[in-house]
Image 1 (cartoon, rainbow, N blue to C red):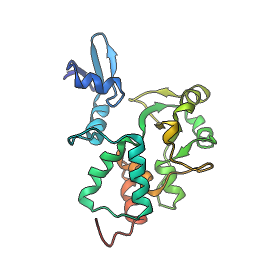
Image 2 (image 1 turned 180 degrees about the vertical axis):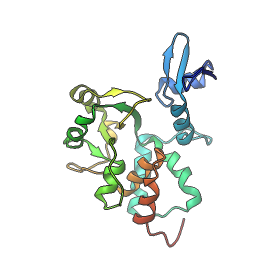
Image 3 (image 1 turned 120 degrees about the horizontal axis):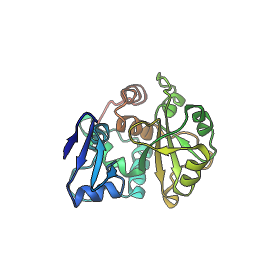
Image 4 (image 1 turned 90 degrees about the vertical axis):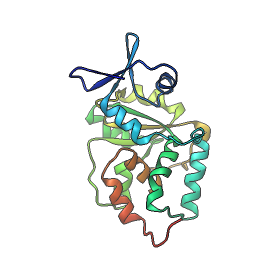
Length: 212
């Protein structure tokens, strides 16, 4: 990996595993000539969220079954295991960074088939966090292309204000009419983004007298 002078980007010349990650959009990069170029921020995000233990990551379906089990059984995870579980559950969706005109954000928040996560969900559960000029939104795979077209959404890793979490139709975990994700998923969204509001959700929403 070599830095491009003054750009805050890195050129990736490594074949095989890196290219596989790029092609399946696990590692955000742009093809320039024969090289893959990734921003420093994109690389930091990748390192923060990647699952580095042996074995393949969970499927989307398995990740949601685990999330539902944690919520249903009110399982409380020890603090030193939270980051491991967060990384493990990252595979709950395909995560894409995008940009949309700020004036369109309110319309997206009202989209009838989208489910809001991140700070919107934290506010809904009365956590004392401010809304930013950005949005976390869960989408059906079958709605993804239409969403991009209807709202002028552009995939953009460097200048993003829309964090898109795309779920396969057959795995969609939300009930009809649900507007916000659960506490667990809200925390996952914020912690994945290294948003300080994740600690507010953790501290205020989870009473943790015991750990497993």
